[in-house]
Amino acid sequence: MVRKKIVITSIFAGLIVCLAAIFRPVPAASPENTLKSHGTVETVFETGENDLVFKLKGDDRIYYLNQGLENGLTLAELREDLSGQAVEIYYVKYWTPIDPLSKLKHIAKVDVNRTTLYSEIK
Image 1: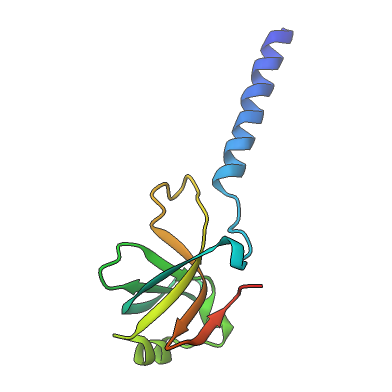
Image 2: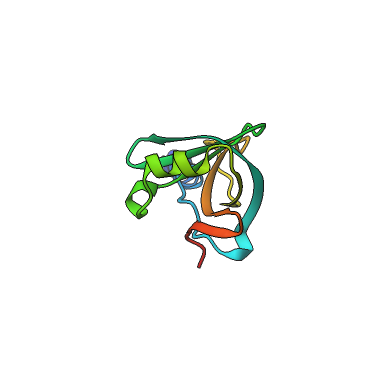
């Protein structure tokens, strides 16, 4: 009976640890935990709850700006200003089992022509 309780408790604890690893939030952006990617903007589009997605030419990663439309940016302006433009995107270095190949990147900062268009780096 005691052994059964230990097994059930161990399974439950393991499940909680796995769920915490899978659904952990993206860490706050800082200069120490961001990486930079260069590219030419192929397209910008909206998904979900005011999120923005940037696709760069020749790059199979997807860069997303969480609730970007709530931060003063507009989709029409971004499409007009960024299509075909060279940009530097800084994204949070982060791994999750939901995206094991790390194809989805959370944008921390966007620079165009050495001008910061958006930044959440503290």
